[in-house]
Image (cartoon, rainbow, N blue to C red; front, side):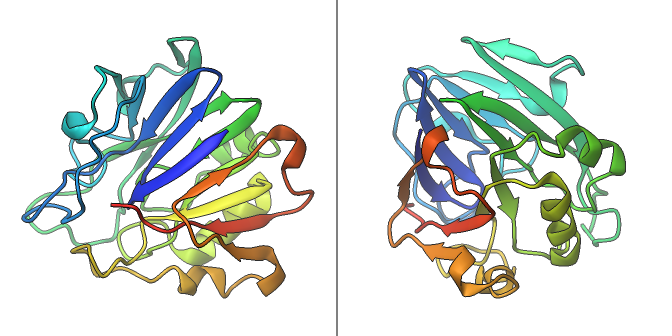
Length: 226
């Protein structure tokens, strides 16, 4: 499976003859400030349809099928042969969002090239016991929110990683000097783990296969490409 990091919580995954883009941001000044993607995809999955940092497929080409994870039923949904399962969550229940309250979003899972993927969306609270039980031992690759503030606290994220036991974690949704959000840098997360468990890839791209997954937890930090 080929993985490419665009920015924030947005990745491109290629495998099994499909290309999947996760949580696309609204590009440009006045929004995320990240550059447009302008690359094609077969499927776009959004953890909600209301957050400009997670739900704008307008700059993805190729006429993809756009999936709003919040609308997927409990039994999941199959799109172009890809079965997507969701876990309904909320933005932070304690963060001050100003004139609006916290909104719903969803974590989602799917399997591509034999690798079981979990994207934790924009969850703002500890992952529930019900969801932890369902995910435990069922995830190979976890895209993890590591910027704190309005998203899951790092202590709670660490606890979730210990329970879910992914073999690979790729951080996302952390501070970027190009972005507009005042959130934590990725180092606040990575320094909580042994140096030998962390690889700074030095590129926006990474290739994984079922056969080459690490035996234990390993964190790969990708470079933002947009």
